[in-house]
Image 1 (cartoon, rainbow, N blue to C red):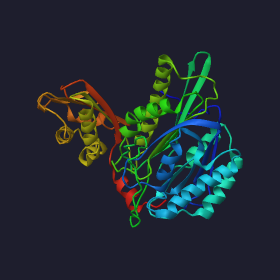
Image 2: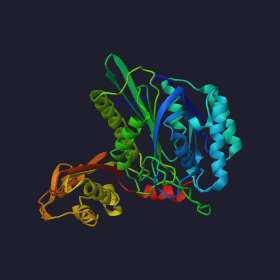
Image 3: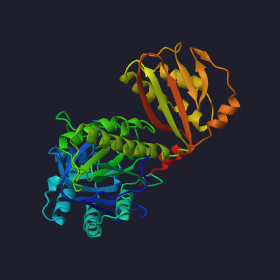
Image 4: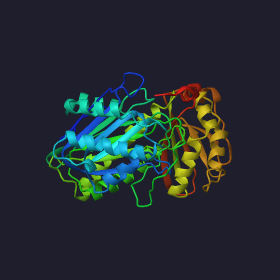
Length: 418
């Protein structure tokens, strides 16, 4: 397991503070900067309704080099038309003016919060100017940056890993946020992405944001490949309500300050393992902090016909309100799980499948298995529930993380306002 303390890779400074954007005095401006141009890769929401920072961020990261990230919470800058795009650019221009030797295109803008409101640029401008003098490389600086992205989250989310490449020690760290409106399907930017105009849409917004830094030395092409792959088995494998956000973003910056190159098959394998570990830890922490959640539900699909089928079945089970409420009530209602697998639109034969809840077989080859419902119910009251479905149709596997669905989820989302 990765270190849940936030270690600081060499070559980066960060901080965060409260600028008055949120209604409560919690950090809402964050700034991350590399001492020198860093290799960069980012994946973004594939929602056709995407926020202004996504449109700008896709352009800025295209060259594979960034100097930093400038962000706000409390306002998503989504569905804000041409003014929203101008405001996202203004954030980058201001960031650049405060860091000598940088260009506005070297900054990635991010926002999270309520959809459909213009950014309070006076507060944001003052906040960015105030946060730059506070930049530092300690764990507390990194935690302040991490706190600046939170909305309905109840806790900071962080993970780090350290490993050796030759004689050099490499640090890889990440922070993220997300508790509701979580159903990421992020991907690398493509030429097909275009801006949508939907200015009349206003509503709730929570978003999944993740920022990862490492002092390893990697070319942008390799960084893009590794981030894309690990995203599919981590951030894209967590769901709270399967509501894809307009602002989902995950960004990885490599400063190269350790002097260690990731360029051989062995070093790439080592780095990939650490990246998977950190990102999966962050994804797990999102599920654990789901709005109103009392437990994590880890759904593992084994021996599906193919990878697409394994993903479809896992997501179908994870997003079933009936499954999620059963998990909340500690109800070993295996019928809801099996039926969710059946309507996933993927090859599935119940006559060959076995379903296990917390190490107890509850369904086998098309019919119920003999088990003690009271004992299984008691086991479901744990902080983590393991649902294992063996399809016995192939060799593909997939794991997705979700949480139970409680009355508190409804209360939070009925009353939500950042």
